[in-house]
Length: 150
Image 1 (cartoon, one colour):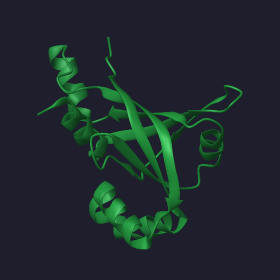
Image 2 (tube, one colour; image 1 turned 180 degrees about the horizontal axis):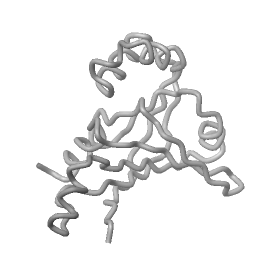
Image 3 (spheres, helix red, strand yellow; image 1 turned 90 degrees about the vertical axis):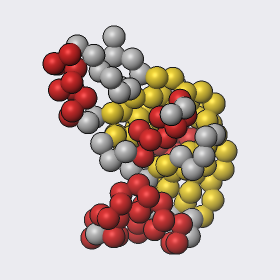
């Protein structure tokens, strides 16, 4: 499996945690968890805009952002404690630049949430999330760096 395929696999894994770091024009940092993001190809990330006010204010001032994808699967930690080796990647820092913000259709929202959350996308909570997602933000990937624990 190629490097970018490993990144995409971890990015979409249900055992992963995805956060987005942004910085205001004044240099103030913000980091927020994001659940409605995915990598449709090897060079971009799509994020459905939810209720993360400061994140979006920062992106209007500074389009540079970093997605942190962390592998939180409990078995990788168990393997580490038993063998002293992690095996699977700890995660990735994906450096990006916001390219475009546009309205998102309900069909796109449903498809993206289904891809990201699977069967629970249609649940009561999934429908509540879907109601808040009105815009699609498209980021170009500028660099990917693996997170190494030691």
